[in-house]
Image (cartoon, rainbow, N blue to C red; front, side):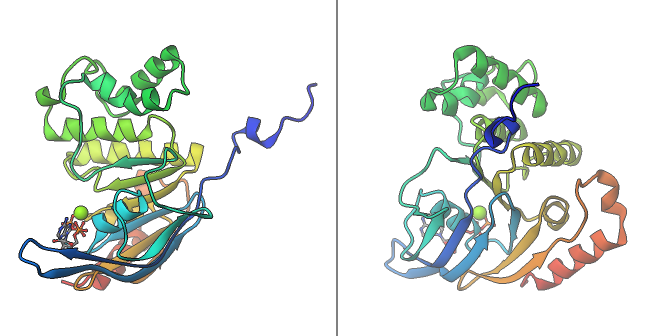
Length: 267
Ligand SMILES: Nc1ncnc2c1ncn2[C@@H]1O[C@H](COP(=O)(O)OP(=O)(O)OP(=O)(O)O)[C@@H](O)[C@H]1O
Ligand SMILES: [Mg+2]
C-alpha cells in the first residue's frame, strides 16, 4: 500500500474562499447628474463552499453587488473580502456567468469556452480540448464547437457562457441569471449539472435569479433584496436535504419555502 496521500490528492485542495460583503454602498451618477443609490450599506457573508442565491425585484442592485464582488466595479463605500483579501481587481479564482452572454463573435464556440484556460496558461492543449468537449456535452451543445456565437440562439449563447465560466474550475462562481434564456427542461437539466459540479468541487457560489423555485432547489440559503435603496432584507436557510433530486420539487417543504420567500420579496 502506498503512503496516505495528502489532502490535496484526495480532492480537498485549497478551500474555496468565503465572501464577505461589508457595508457596501454604491452610488451611480446618471447623465443628468442625479444620484441613484443602487446599494446602501449592504452586508452579508457567504461561507467557503456555500451555495447562496440572491432574489429581489428588478433594479434592486443584484447585478451591481455581483460586479463589485467580481472586482469589475468599485464600491462607493465599504469593501468586499475574498478570503482575507480585499477585492480590488478581477481574480482568476472567480468564474463569472453574466446576465447577458458576453461572447467573442470572431471566435468559434469551442475557442470562446477555452479562452479562460488559454489566458491562464496552466492547462495543456489536449487537456483544454478534452475539457471543452465535456463542457459542450454538459450544456447540450455537443457538435456545436465549430459554430460562431452569431449563429446560435440566445439560450445556446447563454449555455456557452456558462461552460466558459466553468472552464477553469473556479473556486468562486458568480452567476447572474445564468439560466434566464433557457427552456424549462434544459433549465432543469442545468440545475442538476450545476449541483453535480458544485458537489464535486465545492466552489463558493453566488447565484442571482428571478425564479424562486430555482433558488430553493439549488441553494443552502436565499438572500432577499429590496430596492430604493438596494439592500438585503432577509436571509432564508434552505433546510432541504442534499443531494437534491427533481422529486423534491413536489414536496410540501419545497412549496412552503418558495411561498415564504415569495412573501418576503417586495412588489
Ligand atoms: N452604470 C449605471 N449607471 C447608472 N445607474 C445604474 C448603472 N448600473 C445600474 N444602475 C442602477 O442601479 C440600480 C441597480 O441595478 P442592477 O443592474 O444592479 O439591478 P438588478 O437587481 O440586477 O436588476 P435586474 O433584476 O433587472 O437585472 C438600478 O436602479 C439601475 O438603474
Ligand atoms: Mg441584474
